[in-house]
Length: 432
Ligand code: GDP
Ligand code: MG
Image (cartoon, rainbow, N blue to C red; front, side, top):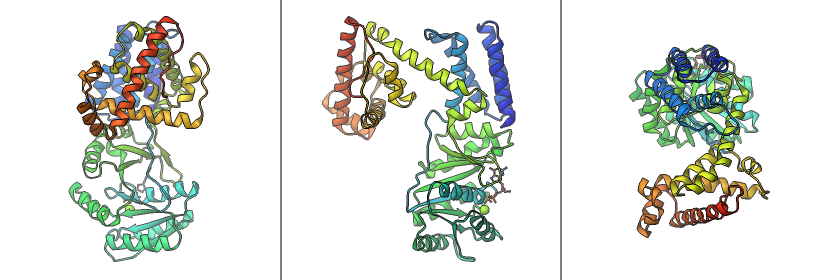
């Protein structure tokens, strides 16, 4: 990734050095950006989509008060890169005491190494971990994993010559009897055929019922990683992905982008052969590091806040439909902890941690509900009848009470905004 990092840092310094940010300067910078991304094996369609979006945003969006168009360009670059690499949200493996993780992937992808890396990672976080070797095809697989387990001081189970399903099931029982809290199962993935790999995975999943199936993917295959992630994602839609060999691979960026495009969640990246070399993957901090600008994230946060606080005037002047309400909430949820946002607003708000948590959950739920509405419904909330409420609740996996709750909050916000237009003040959404 070193190469991509250098390339992107060069783009950032280009942006900083341009005397004026006009169309010519932006075009020039974006051509350079395209070159860097293509070199990193990001697929051409993703590269074009990204540069097109950045260019559009830089000249379409208003520059928030107190900021420059140069900063808007940096922000658009940062945000669109984050988007391409998987979005704002950080995901975690479903790990619980008594849980089982199943690792699958092609031979040589780094499963066995990653199994040990994960064991060490969760051991450090207080779990009593056990590793199972369900690979009886590769000679030496048993020894490889048992040595790794030994070196990091976690339990190990293996049974030479037995079918993988049998080993896995026996192993879970044996390790649980020893008081192991988190079990990680390493598999063979001997096939080069995607179909066989997925069939084997199905068989193991059906009998083992793991909390999570984790696909281990080699990042050196670059953008081709997308096809593998997609095939996997069809079989295990909630499954997670670990991309290995992100160190030193010039194609890692392409692999990440291609995987993210399928909607699969990359949870960790492997960044070396050593067992400590496993990093949780979080697109915003990854992109900040790539761009070589730790302060970029804070710039972006400050700009988002400035926009949010500046918005009420625009909202009051225009019609405040559910569409505007949704945009406001999405702006909020992108910025993270509610507390930080409220601190910025005029007036003082007493926010307890409980209230904050409930607020964030409401925001997520409300956005999901509004995603299940049609554009017409969002633009004309009055048309939302009782039968539509039932349909919307079903579509968003919520209850009719939740939908009504959202509509009430929207109406109260609308009323508040009208009052605000008379007596200027801060923005405020009741209920969050
Ligand atoms: P498996 O066949 O899927 O179990 O793959 P292994 O775990 O045996 O790994 C295959 C090779 O990839 C080994 O030489 C590992 O040391 C190497 N490897 C695994 N993960 C990483 C990584 O994140 N970075 C680097 N550089 N090498 C890795
Ligand atoms: Mg192996």
